[in-house]
Structure formats: structure tokens, C-alpha cells
Image (cartoon, rainbow, N blue to C red; front, side, top):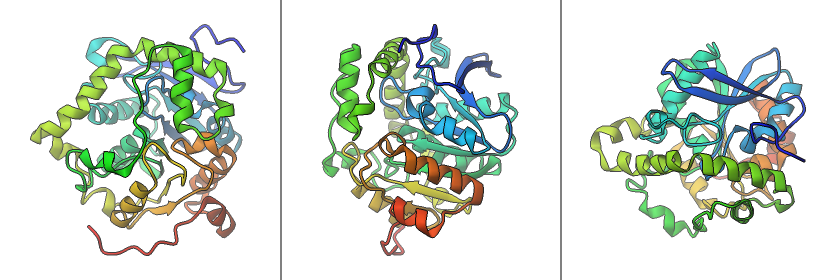
Length: 320
């Protein structure tokens, strides 16, 4: 299947749109659904990521069919986001949180559900702590929150988990496919058009992505930025309805990281789905689609769905 003129996969019923934000940047997003509660979906942080790559094939159309208005923006440094240097993610997650606020303001979203995978889950966590009054409920999928929770101040402990190290991307569509095959359990969904789209976007955002990587290091090194970065005493005290899905077969950030986070996030219910890696919404899309729709509708899951999603049976202690 050929890509669109914008270099995107075409999914029937999913529209590609643009909006000018208050700071002057031109933001790209995909959307579906005409009525109902709004949902904002935040993609992950590997090169070539975007709203379409992370959410467009299964989650966006499904939630729209279930009565939601769905928005999946391309965050700075990714997808078709504005490539002018002034709009690069110089402060990584802090830039992204401000972007999401500017985006939802431009969409006139006063209250909404929000979710994210990997980097998007980190950004979701920071957003809900910064703007809790805007969030109806939220869902996280597989990320490493240990630095923000004070468990790994400089991020050095992550290597000890035994997760794979993503090799440098060579800029080609084939190389993009090789990279994705490392972290996605269902390799058959890594189509040629997906590889091509992600490669085009990864090359488009090469400099902005490097600014994002440097921004993460800048936050950890700057005490003034770190105080905005910390989530301990914030994320663990929220009462907004929330769940966290962490695939048992995650090889990028192994599930032991999820077990540790569960100890420090007493108000978030954890699930550990089987046959699921780092990008759960891609590995087990039917399950994740059902979980998202039911949770956003009801603020909880049925006993049957909880069981199928791998509800945690771990006993939480008073850690943290």
C-alpha cells in the first residue's frame, strides 16, 4: 500500500490534521470520532515514532467506534511535528508536557482521558501531575519511571535490568524494520509501508530527536529542572482513576521495572498481559482496545477482562 502525500499510512476513518498552537508551531495529529468524550493518545520515543505509528492502526479507530473522539498528536521531535529549531524538545519531557497543554487548548478540550506508551506514558505521568484538573482518567503502558520516583536518580540502574540496547538506526526503511523487530512480539505487523513511514519521519526529525536526547541528560544534570521533573509525592498521591499495563515479554524495559513501580504507585492498578512486549497496543491490540474502551467508559474493568489483562496479584508494601 502506497503512503499518502504526507508520507503516512492511510487508515480508513482516521484523518490527518494540522493545527497552529499558541506558541506559533504547526502541530500534526491524527483523529477519529465525531462525538463523545475525548481521548488523547501519546506515542513512544524510539526514532520514527508518531501518532499514526503508535496508535493509528488499531486503537484510534476502535475507540472512535466505541463513542470517543480520539486525538493522537505527533510530539516535538517525532512524526510530522514542526522541525523549526525553536520548537525542538530541548527540555525533553518538560517540553512535551507544555506541548500537550498547548495542543489540548488548541483543540478546546477542557476535560479528557489520556494515555501513553513508553515515552508517551512518561509524558502522560508528568502531564496528569501538572494538570490534574483536566484529566478524567489515564492509562500507562510500559515505561521507566524510576528516575522521577527517586528510585534511580541518574538512570544508571536501568542497564542492570538486562533489557536490550537499541542499536543506532542507519536511516533506512530496512534498518527501521530491524529496529522494530527487536521490541515488537508480533513481527508480522511490521509492514513495508510502516517501515517506510517511520524511516521518512525519523530522517525528517533527526536533529530535533537529538535535541530530545540531549534534553533528557540536561534535566538530570540541572537541579533547577530536576525539581520540575520529580514525580515522587505527586504521581503516587493522585486519586484520578488510572491503570498501568506492562507486558510480560517486554525486552526493552523488562517487567521487573513494572513490579518495582507497582510498589511505589499504590493508587494505580497494574496489569501484566501475556504475549505482550514493550508496545502492548501493537502486540495484543484486541485486548488493549477492549481495556481502553471499557476503562475510559466505566473507570474500571470487569472481572473477566481483568483476568484476561493479567491483573496483578502482587501484595503491595509500604515502599516509598
